[in-house]
Figure 1 (cartoon, rainbow, N blue to C red):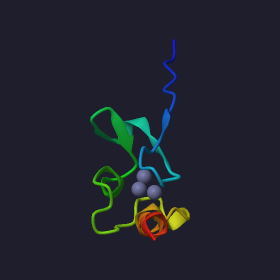
Figure 2 (cartoon, helix red, strand yellow):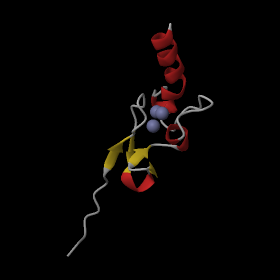
Figure 3 (cartoon, rainbow, N blue to C red):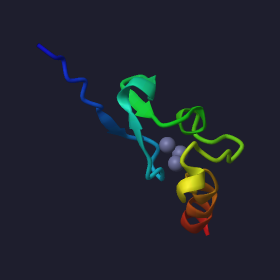
Figure 4 (tube, rainbow, N blue to C red):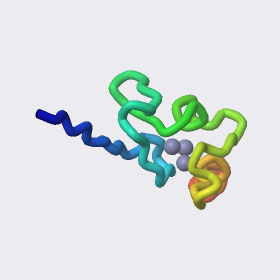
Length: 71
Ligand SMILES: [Zn+2]
Ligand SMILES: [Zn+2]
Ligand SMILES: [Zn+2]
């Protein structure tokens, strides 16, 4: 009998992040799961997340989003 290890992909809980992360590699904080430390900490210094090379810009996008809301 073979155990099939299914990879569970979770959507990053960062509001602007488009990344999915393997459940085994997710950063878990308070019931939420994030693709990277940058997302988990809320991008305090606008760090790019681990998905940045594949087109996710949630780190820098957050700033534009906030500027849009406050202006
Ligand atoms: Zn991201
Ligand atoms: Zn993320
Ligand atoms: Zn993020």
